[in-house]
Length: 112
Image (cartoon, rainbow, N blue to C red; front, side, top):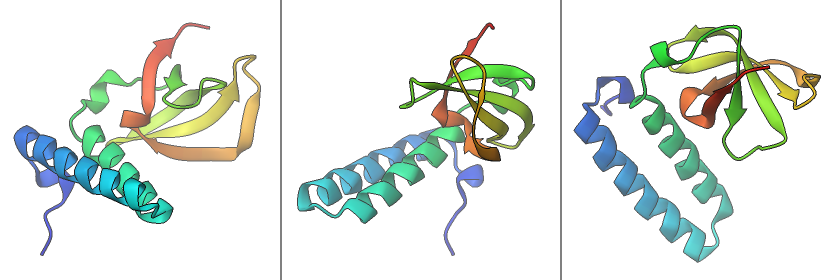
């Protein structure tokens, strides 16, 4: 039975991220786009478990890693997931509605 990331130690998470990065690199070199995307998502999840969810606050805007055109507004936290919605830099809602993002996808908080 596979161990869940929530049961890993910090060192085990670092090792797992290293293994996943190697697999992602191989998939990228072989042109297997879907497999590469899966490894990238797993890396984000493992990194999320290395962060402290207490560092992320509700009713706050955060930068989005890899998406400079949008911010993410956290309505509430649930474990390593931030629930809320994307907004444009002009603070207009973007997208269909509420979504959950792993906290490793969030950057610095933004004062608006």
